[in-house]
Image (tube, rainbow, N blue to C red; front, side):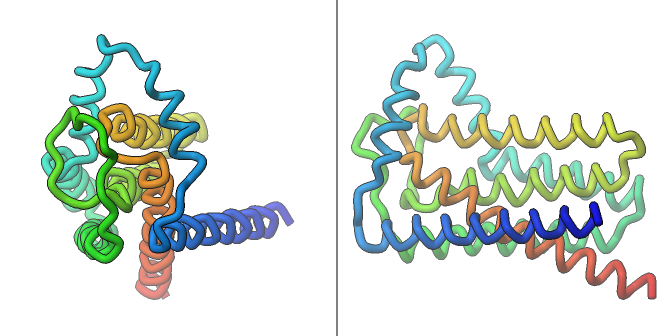
Amino acid sequence: MEAKSKVNYSFIFMGMVIIFALFTTIKVATHSIFWMDDKIAGLFSHVPNSVIPFFIQLTEMGDKKGIGVVAILMLIWLLVKKRNYLGAAVFALSIALGNEISKLLKDYFARPRPDLEHLVDVKSYSFPSGHAMVGMTVYFLIAYLLIESAVSKKAKIIIGACAAILLLLIGASRIILHVHYPSDVLGGYALGYIWVSLSIVLYNYLKKKKIN
């Protein structure tokens, strides 16, 4: 009964994420104004300048170099330590395709960046946030694979909490550094969650098929 309840909650949450993803993409496509962009950005405008260097360093965790280093370390762990070749293949494929999908969506929507002084260098369009979308794919999938190998419940909770905090901070950094609207980040999270969920479904399907 408990397992069935968890599955139902997962479907409900996924439905909410899909609805939100559709909501943000439609509003961006129709050039509509998001109330959240003013409200949330207003909250982040009070961040003191003294912490800006921290967020500049933090945002690198969602950039190409940061993602690349983390992905390579994870692949080494999966291949050498765990010998989870299927997990490594799905992990690499998910990141590669997720990154390309993010680029295609940016070029399709062609949303300009916020009209503010950008505190880090940016060259692509604004929606969706690649740091949020690809970051969600990478760090959520890493957390899933680590939790899969973790023995204790405490370790699983710590892994999940660390991944969630890191993702939230990376997303916040993009707003604080004036390179994304909050809707870019939240939309990126939603799209990334959908993509990583599909990757996990594929991973579990292939793993089950391999065992059988």
